[in-house]
Amino acid sequence: MKVLAACLLVSTLSAEVLPLTLPKAVAVATAKDGNLRLQLVRESIAQAETRRRQAFSAFLPHLDGSASAANQTRNLRAFGIQFPTVPGLNFPSFAGPFTVVDYRASASQSLLDLASIQRYQAAKALISVAELEAANATNLTVQQVARAYVLALQGDAGMDTAKANVELARALVKLADNQKNAGMGTGIDVTRARVQLANEEQRLLVAQNSRERAVLELLRVIGVDLALTVELNDRVNDGSELPPVLEEILKAAQAGRQDLKAQQKRELVAGMNVKSVAAERWPSLGVAGDYGVIGNGSDNMLPTRSVGVSLRVPIFDGGRREARRAEGGVLERQERLRAADLAKQVELDVRLSFNNLKSAREQIATAKQGLELSENELAQAQRRFEAGVANSLELTDAQTRLARARDNHLNALYQFNLARIDLAAATGGIQEAVQNMGEQKR
View 1 (cartoon, one colour):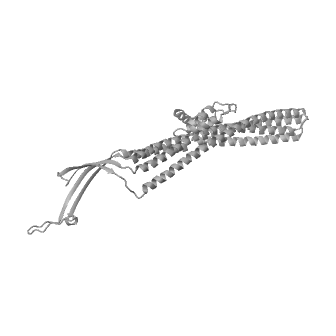
View 2: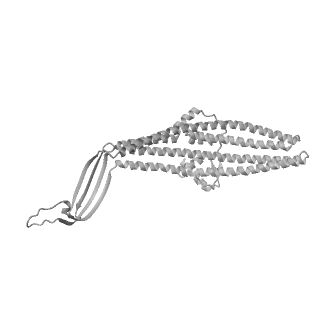
View 3: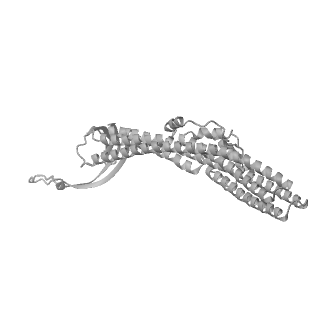
């Protein structure tokens, strides 16, 4: 996938017209330097990893080095030292100045800290949350790319349909001219045909602008240069595939939605945080020591050391710990409610997408039937006009209804494919679905 994306990015720099399939578009968008919003979400994984390293530091030795030098004087009386008065002897109460130099290395190591263990486990779980969120963001990006690609295909097809309508209008203008020259038509017939031609040419301009807009939206979602000229090579489904089973896709959604998995993981992390606060009530055990030399800074430097074991027993902190634990419990319940709400939302997404897909499939059948009837109507109206038994108004009406029927069929076809994309995204299988869309009939 990375090689494919790299090759595509290189080709964008050299090719005047870029051939683009849906899998290639997805590969570029999900590459390391692809969609900018996806890159932003992926940074959260690195952030979670740094937090894990911070939590893991509680289990590693902490080493410090120090060097100090001080020139001091001391008044012994300030320390409560007062020599007795002895006749003939004078004990000074002032000592110094003297120099003390100390070079020392200190180390401490935690031996048992249950709270740190819980915090580390929660930090590790946050990495899984970040990875699931990134996977969900990838699925959303794929969905956006697929929808934009289908809309760009619709723009291509809409422009082709508009061109076909223009060609038909030109042919009917020519027919009206011939009928007038043969004495079987009138000037109003030619005028009607030319008005219809002007209308179809204007619709062609609108279709061209819509196509350009759809392509720009596609390039924006992919994350490439908007000045590129692309040629869409994939085909979309025509609605002839077997419809999915609702019960099966509901099960697939509960198992495949990455955002639901991430929310369930957040609930687990919230529970771990509560346990870490509760574990702070337990004693913690550690060891610490130091080694160094101390003296006056000259040759008279003497080695000293200290080693000790500490046992910390929390007794009372003013209720702060219990308040934090209660707050953590509230957060855990909130995450549990969010998970339940998201599960309902997943089911709603699937049901709505399924209904949209079902409706779009039925619209395709109806629009196809209407298109066939409109083509037959136009053919009959054209024969009647050529035979002189009908005027151009009947022909123009048939031409207008054919253009509308073509638009209805086109919209129904692409609404069906958008519904397929949304359903695949609702079940969490959008990346697998787009690999099959490029093989379907346009």
